[in-house]
Image (cartoon, rainbow, N blue to C red; front, side, top):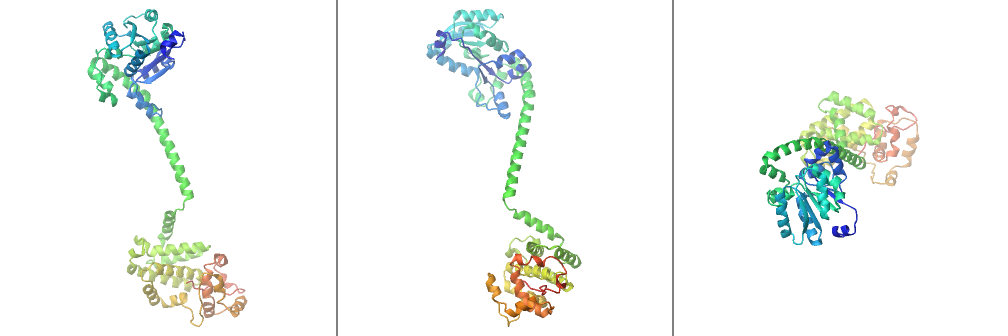
Length: 460
């Protein structure tokens, strides 16, 4: 139902529209009556980019700026089509006289039933003048806050179904004031054009108003943005925590290993020997052996920043490797956890062989530099041919019944017998973690007289 039909049906509902800008907001916060009038409006549009920008920075969705004059011209076109009776209130009388001629020419069919200037200070008389003309729509161009208070208090008494405050729109439509160019309007700088055109009036008005507006909105904007940033940081921290829990962190493991091996320097024999003995004494799990092997390999090679085998300076690392062999000879000669020492040393050498671009040459250099140690670790008699496979069945098939009976005996075997009999067994036993847990428990396992000694086994 349009406004004309609503008036004919005597529907006593008045739609009150106000515009809000950066000057009016702080004024409304100081004036309770103005604030109440704006709060009771049927519609409150953002007439000014200051309101739009501040609202968006405070998390309030304002789609665009809607100026009073643009909305008024669009409504006049609709009112002309529907035959709505229009009353113009406010501004100077010569401006109103100009509008009564120009607006019907611009909007054919527009019915202006009455006008009244805004210099009458008695609002009751103004309301009576409007009521006498029986309009359907009323446009009020009084100064603020008188405009908002008149619309709030007297609009229902006039019998109009639509009342809107338009400020200085009458002067612009009448051609008395030139509006800002379109480009200025689009970028939200129309207020600067007004200051340029009317500096004596607009500079004090906008100066005081914008300062007050900044004092109102800036703390709110800062509070909202800080809360928003805090929420974003918390969400990011939660996401990172979940990722860290769900994904492995090989980089962190490598750094941890690097920190562990930072105290190991093969060139410093006494310090390296102390570190090696202390680390061997703390080994309690088969997984610790693999970690210690990687730490030693890293201390020998990766400390120079190499990331692959082709970038490693093997010639420069040979002295470190020889120093490591000398340290292990001292550890093995001392008798402290010789089984663990051989396991770690064998793993380190095998790892170096895997990394070396010429494994055969590296293996030959090791035999030349430490023939006794390499023979003890990797050589076995040629009269016992063993085939190593990935299955336990092939391993068990390499031992005869005589070997099984001797393991169960309590007599202590000689060093040569233990080396020859059990070296292959312990090489495969390192791959079966469950069967080696009891070998890590203490340093004095070789003193037990009821079990065959496995301490000199050699990993391959």
